[in-house]
Image 1 (cartoon, rainbow, N blue to C red):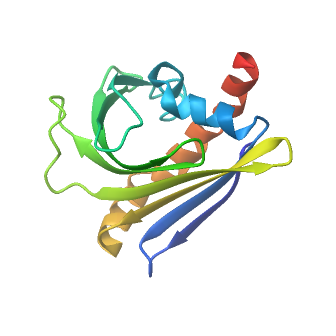
Image 2: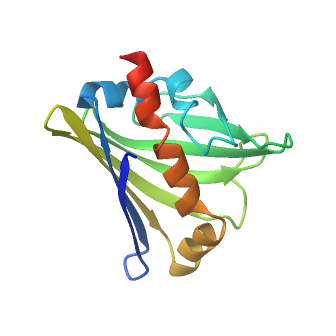
Length: 163
């Protein structure tokens, strides 16, 4: 399984996930840059994603929704804030209504995804920072830790199939 560690730190209001992939940095980057590949691994297997808009360019807005097993839909958005292809990108991530308007009262996280060569593979570090400890606890209560683990653990299979 790719996920090697998940650390939650209430003092810094962060969740840090570390994963290792059996593919070069450029290949892992390509997965995040391509909405059709990304939607195959963003969200747990029972909540596949559909990306409506997606571009890893500073200032762009990504919109997506995940569809649950009973047909329920949950929308979200990213605002891309930094890009250093293929090493890292940063974005704000929030919940949305089905018109992709930010959902009031829901947490927004600031995220930095970093990819580093690790032998012939890639070490990925995903850091999400929340405005408050309460916001962090809210997403933890919603299952973000297990959902992230399930989502990221799908990536190796996709990388192997696309190799």
